[in-house]
Amino acid sequence: MASNVLIIREQKGSTKLQSLISSVTEAVATGSLKPGDPLPSVNEMSRISGFSRDTVVKAYNLLKKQSVIESTPAKGFFVSGNSSKVFMLLDDFSAFKEQLYRSFRENLPESVSVDLLFHHYNPQVFEQLVTQAAGRYSMYVVMNISNRKLHPALSKIDPNRLLVLDMGDESVEQGSFLLQNFESAVVSCLEEGLELLKKYKYFILIYSEEKTPHPPDTENALRAFCMMHGLAFEVITEAHPECMVPGQVYFVITDSDLVEVLKGCRQSGLSLGSDVGVLAYNDTPMKEIAGNGITVVTADFSEMGRKAAAFITNKQPVRELLPTRLIIRSSL
Figure 1 (tube, helix red, strand yellow):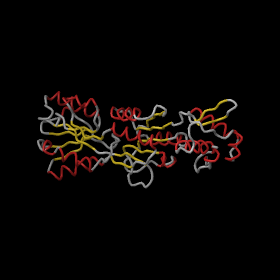
Figure 2 (cartoon, helix red, strand yellow):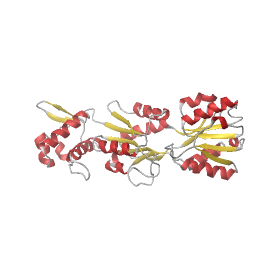
Figure 3 (cartoon, helix red, strand yellow):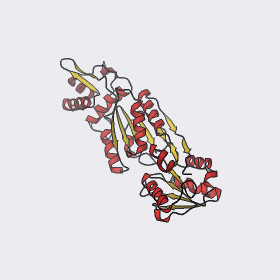
């Protein structure tokens, strides 16, 4: 009987309604409740939980909307065969995030449904979306908003059901993550391309911490690399196509800055890979062909999607820094 495996307690910082929903979804997520298992009637659930009938009715209705449970007249409530619902919160919908999501979705069982949302690096939106989702899903996949620490709102989610992607704090003792290393891994990639980079006299990073939600660790990595090898280094906050001259290598973070650099090369008659060099962060299919191929420093977002899907399917903890690669193309 479900009442034997359901542990219902009022959780700190949550309403009684949220606590009841979280208790049921957690039992389903951990396998304590399996598809087809019956749930207590409204009266019975009210008795064993100590919550009012109204609270139980509201919780059951919300769980039905989320496809966690089903009901049949005269038979009552039971766990749905489509009981696994995933909350996925990404930062934005760029080309490489599309690769991530496609790979994630393709490697999940058809019975798993996914609610996909975006926070666009807005702390208030992030907190609101996470708070509203807490306790309402069987599993959670979230791109953290910072590379320095986990957002406090994530403490509202059971760490056994949470996977943090891309940016986060690997030193935390609990929880699962698939993260990038934005500093030492970048240095390793640049070392791999050192002979090509030495052709150029000046290394320019186009980056603004205020405008670009990319960790500043990468700027630290570039400074260290250039100092180590005696390369001149400068940071500019935006691309200036009219100022491009031979002998410079540009490292761009955003696709919009990459477009401006390529425009500048065309306007000035500069040849990629000989007059100037170009590197970009994060690979996309377009970068394989733009300018006859843009050299990239990148993680494998398809692999990130596959590993995230494995976490949802197997429910086994994962704590991994994904490798960062240098893919050399004609722009260098």
